[in-house]
Every structure is written in C-alpha cells, then in structure tokens.
Length: 167
Image (cartoon, rainbow, N blue to C red; front, side, top):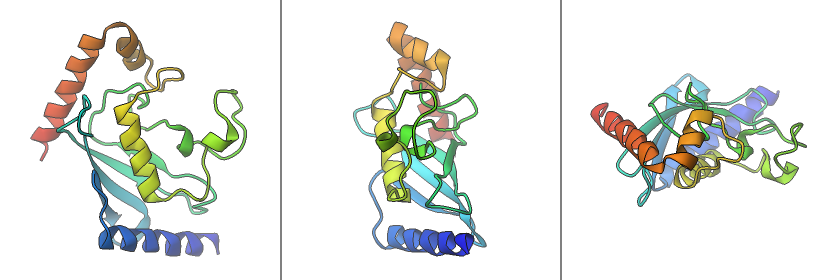
C-alpha cells in the first residue's frame, strides 16, 4: 500500500516538473518503469564556484516516501564539504525525521514529508552556494574550504571543467 502511494506521489511530482520546469535543474526517471530512481541534472548556481558546471545525480526514493527521505548521490565529481567522496549528498533535510542522535541538528531541520523533488534539489543548489563546514561529509574538502580557499577554488574549477567535458 505505501509503495503504491509513494509511486502515485512521485508520478505527480514528475508530471508537475514536466509541466512547470524549475530554473537550475532538470529531472526525470532513470528507467521509465521505475518511478523510485530519478536522474537529476543540476546547473552550477550563478555567482558561485560551481557556476558553469553540469552535475548529474541519482535520487533514490524509498518505498515509504514521503515518510522517509530519498538519498541523493552525485555521479559527476563534486568537491564540497557536504558531499561524501562517493558523491552522496549530506544535508539536513535528507536526514531521517526526528531528533538527531548526534545533537547537531534540530528535528525541524531534518526530513519532513512536505518536501518534494523540487524543494530537495533547490536545497542542494543552496548547499552548493554556501557550504556548511561545521559537520562535513567530506572532511578534506571542509579543511581545504576553511584553510586553503584558493586550493579549494582550483579543485572545484577542475570539477566544473570535467562536468562540462561530459556533455
């Protein structure tokens, strides 16, 4: 039952995005027979180090969506404090609902069923604009962001160039 409700909700969100595309990203299904895995293309936000980049990601939804959050993993290299080395995105709204066992986040900052594909991707775009190095997923990127901003900028520029070459 939950899977069919999740499927209907995801179909509706896909239809809405097709009817009214949102600036900064595009999204669609990886496989038209599976509404639970989406391919997302994010354009590097203007006036950021990521500007001009085209970053691909896979958004995987659980069968009990929207009760539980999806996971998002970049398939294009992204050097960022809030992106694990394997590409998995680490932002509060993708963390399970409820209290944070580590005490870093308020429950209100974590996943809520009101989030949509659009709000998730817009949060990721915002993350690219302002890294959070307080609780990083990529410790090396966070350290470089804090201590060696010029080296960080160069590394991100290489990622942007690589992403453009993949087009």
